[in-house]
Figure 1 (cartoon, rainbow, N blue to C red):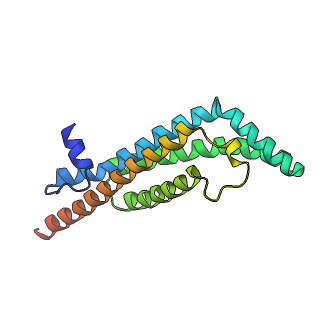
Figure 2: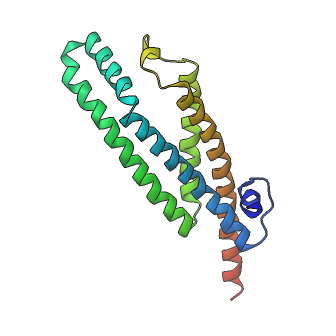
Length: 177
């Protein structure tokens, strides 16, 4: 456990290939954390979130009655898209775990930073249309998601450092032959 905490710390010096692999895998742990949070979100959407989606459809229909069919279809599409993103995220996490590289942590760090910024904007109502509070996600989901994003960002930064050091160590080992 102490090794994983040390590997997840983006300020810890990395000197061996094992430490570099562990640090690079911190990014995979961040992705798996996102998968877990996504599964919780999907379960919420399939249970108590149904009422939230129905309220969103009703609000969209009240504003523009011609979009009633499209809004209902989009609500179901949201569930399918959420499941697809969780599956893709799981696959990418497994790739990062078994073949650590620097590309995946960089992409996910950018996505997490974007999610953190937009999540904070949504939490404080910046750029939200009128009536959006009526169909907003519950507070536990909003603030829990922001905490998860901060943890993921730290882990992805550690993953970037680990993958970068792993590349340097492997390149140096290849040069000695």
